[in-house]
Amino acid sequence: MKFKFFFLLFLFVFTGRLNAQTQVFTNTDRATFIIDIAQYVTWRNSKKIDTYRLGVLDRDSLFFKELTSFASGRTIQGKPVKTVLFDSIIQINNVEIVFLNRNTGFDIDLVYQQIKGKQILLLSENYPYHKSMINFIVAGGKKRFEINQARMDAEGFKTTVTFDALAVKSELDWHKIYSETEKELYEQKGKVAQLNDSIQLQKVEIEKQEQVLKELVTEVNLQKKRLVQYMDEIELLEQETNQQKKQAFQLLSEIKKKQKVLEEKENELLLMTDKIKKKEAENIRQEQILDKQSQSIKIQKDQIDEQDKVLNKQLEKLHQQSIIINLGVTLIIMFIVLVYFIYRSYKIKKQSVKNLKEKNKIINEQKVLVEQEKEKSDALLLNILPSKVADDLKLKGFTEPEEFRAVTVFFSDFVGFTEISSKMPPKQLIDELNDLYTIFDNIMQQHHCERIKTIGDAYMAVCGMPVANNAHAYNMAEAALAILNYIKQRNLNSSIQWKLRIGLHSGRVVGGIVGTKKFIYDIFGDTINVAARMESNSLPMRINMSESTYLILKDSFSFEKREAIQVKGKGLMNMYLLDTDAMAQNMV
Image 1 (cartoon, rainbow, N blue to C red):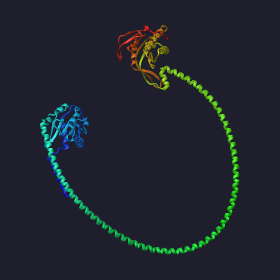
Image 2: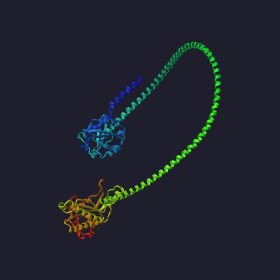
Image 3: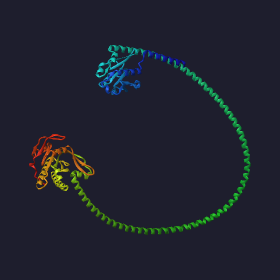
Image 4: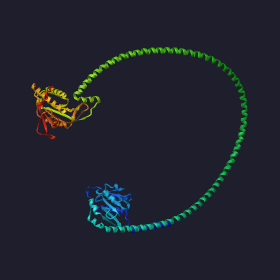
């Protein structure tokens, strides 16, 4: 054991001297050198960097842990440092610096291709000349580095003049340093190998001596165990002898006590024998008395059996008679119940027929009322909704919004309506509008168009929906001409001279139900806005239309082209006035 202690002490001292002589480059030294180098490099986007992320390409996390611990609380150019571990080249991304050691076995050319163009500074240790961006090596106890300026410039990195002055300038110098490093490593490996051989020899000798010592200790332990076993056996024999003596004395004492008890029991047994003989004589006498009594009981039992037989016969007769009586009573009761139920069912059926007739009468009356109300509600629904939409609501309870790609929208309002309406009583005004809009609705219906809504004196209608119609523009133009013709004819015999402006535009719209309490069918889209602009830019008693409507109708009607007009939100727009001399003659 003493030999082993001195050997370990020698090994520790020798190893310490070897490390002092070779000046081993520790992980802490490596981490310090990497952080120091980064202080002298400027990134192209350094102002946008808030944290310098330092990546380590290594399959072993030992150096990474040392670097993480060293970087904690330190900064690069005044900004915090964060470390990232990569175990494959393809993972390298989103860092400012990546470091790899030649001992890890990674191909530095593949690493450069992975980071190329990503503003990542490549630091390496112990690689050949100009394979990295900044490559350092330890030779003769000193840290030296070289800069690949071409790769640094290509990635936009800059270094200080002081830093550049410290770098190795030529490939020849680098190869010389590299050769010295390889030589030092080779010498260190030789010394370590010699030390390992010496250690192995010492270990073999120690193992032999330990084996001999173990055998001696084993033999001594066996002798001790045998001696202890002999002592234990002697002690057990003495304990057993003493125990047997105690048991013998106890047995003698118990035998004497048992003999005394036996003598007492013999006396008691003699007394008991006398008593038993007396009881036997008494039992014989009582048995004789019991024999006499049992004979008397047997005679009485025979008499009782005879009486039971007679009684059973009488009970059987009574039971048969009771069955007959019960059966008759049951039949009578069943007959009465049957008659009662037949009569009751007849009365109920008669009353049910009467009630059913009355209910059928009420149901028929209610059915007539429901049909009448349904006709009223259907008529009312058709007054506020197109027939197709109304049918959808009745069948499905809802209607989906629908896009119509080809429709023509009609807009109109009365010229000077505010001035005229201010001079009329409200009732007269409502009556006038009611007459006008009723005729408008009839004209629209005749030309397969749908009135959408009225807002004051404004009237909006559409053709080509909810049922598609290829003649939507033509039908709407005919309807517009008919409305103007009606206004002219009405003004001949009326004290109120109405003048109407009409605008038409063709395009796409979306139609659907608006609201859940009060249904309103409405249309939406840019087409409505353009139609409204056509109306506002129209002339009294004229029909103004957009170019899209004109292109559809140019072969069917005569037009007067207007100068392009500036329209809010649309710019200059071409507009056309429909020739009212070609007015349709269909009167309402």
